[in-house]
Amino acid sequence: MSTSHDHSQPSPSPAQGYMSEPETHSIVIGYIVWIFGFFGAHRFYYGKQISGTIWFFTLGLVGIGWLVDLLLIPGMDRRAQRRYTTGPVDYTIAWILLTFLGLFGIHRFYLEKWVTGVIYLLTGGLFGVGWLYDLWTLNEQVDQYNRRA
Image (tube, rainbow, N blue to C red; front, side):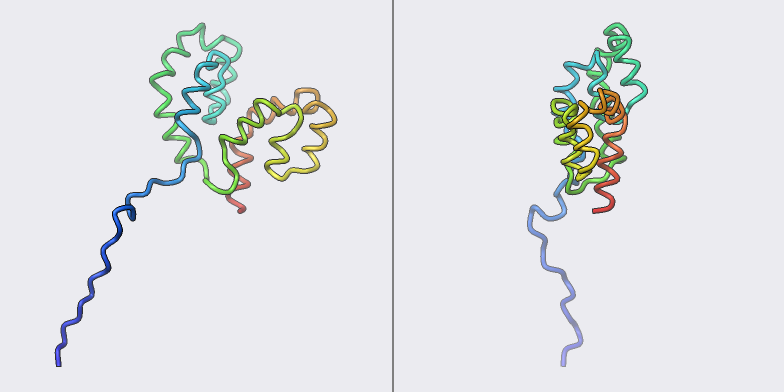
């Protein structure tokens, strides 16, 4: 009777263990919105609301900060990946909806916020004030939704 047992695990397929974590934000989208970065778009996208607001009012610190951000985007992307939770709601889709259809509340419908979605639809995003609020808070809204899911 042999007492040795083979306790080896089956070898993982090449794809196992090498899969990257799901992304919350896309670096490609980060660079695309950087084009409009003198308005702070990429900074809002990565959850940097205060500097995004400063960039908005100073046109990217008179263009200098905007140019420097070209080199800083990879770091902003990594911090966003660590800070925010992946889940059923995609951050990039939510941001696209806010950017282009935010005054109609489409991003709020995407987050299943039906009542405020209808209010935004009927009032033009609370006359633009709600849209500005969501510019500051969208990452956190998506993060909360994904944590509950």
